[in-house]
Length: 114
Image (cartoon, rainbow, N blue to C red; front, side, top):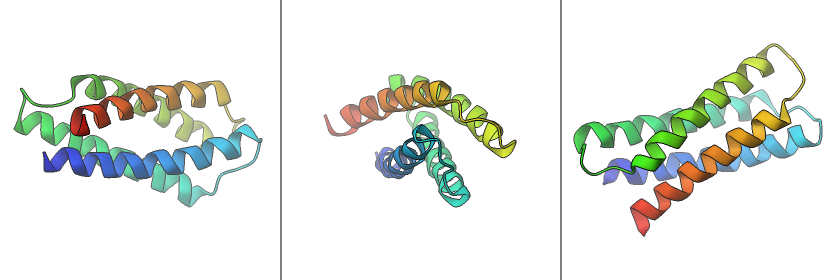
């Protein structure tokens, strides 16, 4: 279970930074690069610990989170790529990315604490 507690902590950090990034983009402002990088690092670390739980206990892991977080990660990589090219902020893609991550996060919290 320690892996899942660490995953919750990492995804919480990613969520807080993601809310900040989204609010900046929604207002058509840039988000600081370090915040974007930190968001990705927290999210990837959360995924690593989630997958570690899957590998250690294949019968005891949050399956819904394990589906939604990687899909959200693909959207996040696309957003990161566009940001690196200094292209317009795709707020619609960011919204879908956020909703997928929220579903993954909520189901993870329910699994761990519910």
